Image (cartoon, rainbow, N blue to C red):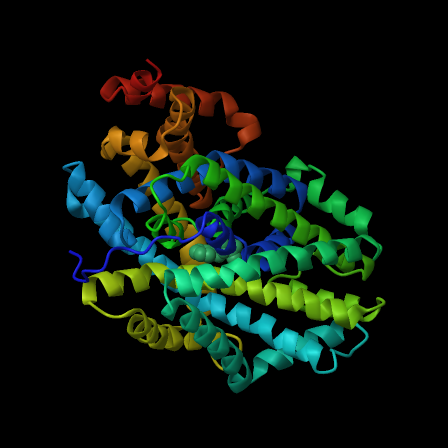
Length: 485
Ligand code: PHE
């Protein structure tokens, strides 16, 4: 299967994987998407469901993906094919690897557009700031920036080039080296911004908005969004984490690493919320503004604050770096597949993938100007890429991954890779075999409009179903009991 004779790359330093995986997880999802979907779905209740999704579903899935990558030592397609082979199961499961790789590619095609917004706002801030005195002025600046395909295309092309430049240099010299300075820089900038935000007024309101729990405000659409976003923000089911895991030395602890990444990612999302919402409330803006939220509210807020331009530069520099450390991870699965299977060198694979990516992302970019009306069922191309990946492919891919790990593959693979104590292994197995699949299915049934599930009203039923699943699962293949014995 592998045509190149080179041994597979590994992370060089002790922190290589942790930095790269955290860099992948922390991105526009945390700073751009999390605040605006929290705004759209009503605040605290959404945040709570999101946290449950991260730790009950996201972490077990992440552990599964890293294990699959390290065991299979390849791109998602190759790694999954190898572990299936090792377990003597049907190769239809390798579709899961293809879907993951495709998903990463699709995410990147709209991600570069948003990252392009960030780069262009950084440039605007550096070259004299953004002027205007009202929300309407800011909306005008934002739409003017989108209006010209040449302008918007310039910025998304720049992001594509930067991404390909880094990944083209390889795992150690490109990815590991760049996250080694970008991640510490990012954390430092975010800290400065929070301290600044705490003095900007509106902080109390922001805390209330993010953490006050109002169960009534949570719709089923909100629940699906929370689950989809948990996958998105942890870079799951998109080939990124699995491929990074394939470069992980065998001695590293997968469980500890996954929890570390999840905590760092959550902390950054909440910190970003605390840095952004004060400015929104202090200026009387609507938190449910949508995708343009941070691009409209923050420049306005920064203007009325001391040293605003400086902190504006800081903010968009931070956002741009966060975007880059994520974008490089989205294409790594494809690159690794091209190098292993097509005998290409890293730079060749990077340029080849980059050209295709550029074409697709250009279509996504056009959704904001000339292609705004090219819609299907009311969604333009950009919206479709976002919807298909984070609402469908990621939850489905996650479901496939946990079923594969919990029921299909040899249990021995995960006992060896995870190397957990019997109790912790049982917890992981319980999550992967029963809790995650049930959670994902319930949210899907709800989202498809088949049945309106309310956790508050239906919890006895859900519990009963869970128990029935455990009994049926353990009777047919008693893995949990065996682990604990
Ligand atoms: N986790 C990244 C973010 O929050 C997005 C991402 C998705 C990265 C899929 C890699 C793969 O911005």
